[in-house]
Image (cartoon, rainbow, N blue to C red; front, side):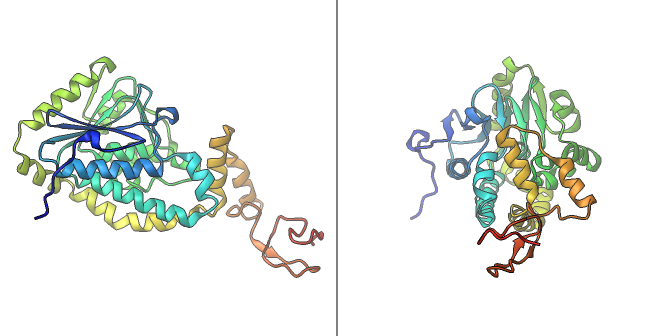
Amino acid sequence: MARFTGQPAESFDFKEIIYEKKDWVATVTFNRPHVHNSYSTLTLQELTTAFRDASWDDSVAVVVLTGAGDKAFCTGGDVKEYADDYTVRPRDYWKWMGVFVECHDALRNIGKPTIAKINGIVAGGGNEFNMACDLAIMADTATIRQVGTMVGSVAAGGATQWLPIMVGDRRAREILFLCDPIPAQKCLEWGLVNQVVPREQLDEAVHTMAQQLINKFPECLRYTKQQLNYWKDLSWSNTIGHAREWLALHFASVEPYEGMKAFVEKRPKDYIGLRQKAADGRSSEFLWGPYTQACGSCGTKGIPQDFQFCGQCGTRLG
């Protein structure tokens, strides 16, 4: 007979998360403080495994999600991975997003109450993990922001779907369009978190909330969670497949190339340069223009419009 039980936390050989289980609480920690707890593909795969184990373990009543160190909770996907891999092979972003969706589904459908313990910076996909949790407690020194339109992406892995539900339409647009950091007190006022406490009281506040949840009936909690997930599930299921397709295709365009390369190279993004190309009637969707030229010497076709020489034989074009 198949038995759906958890394993000892120490039996997992995780590289990029920390997984602990004690006194009815499972704690899952993003453990990449050297990159402000941004997540790689491996991080997402390890998170999925931990969430499944916590879901199956009857000795786990509450799951806490947090970040290692004191600087960041999670700052979203690893932009270097995006810049190095997916601007080169956009189709692989489609595969990556399958891993991302699986991870979020495992967390949202874990069947137990989840608490985001926000110990530091929350950015991009980090806020999507925050919103995927049922409850959130935030240190008073932490901030939350979305950064998609700054780096050449769209926060359609939860933020565009869930922010309007949580904070309202106008506030969601402000967060997603402007990308400004939101201080802790405003996060509380807008409904992004449940509590804000001094940093030194964060552990105690999360422990207190966890104890309150432990002292409830687990089956009633599980079904209450399922009912409350309705609007999140509806918006997610209706849009995430579209987001996966569009974002993968978008990685073949100039915006993510410029935004993510600039981020990795620590230089300003050329927002105005892209706008000026469009204003001048040139293509702003391709790095070197659309593939409109052909070489009269060697016959090569599909040469970008802005190229002055054929990349195959070196002949001057035009």
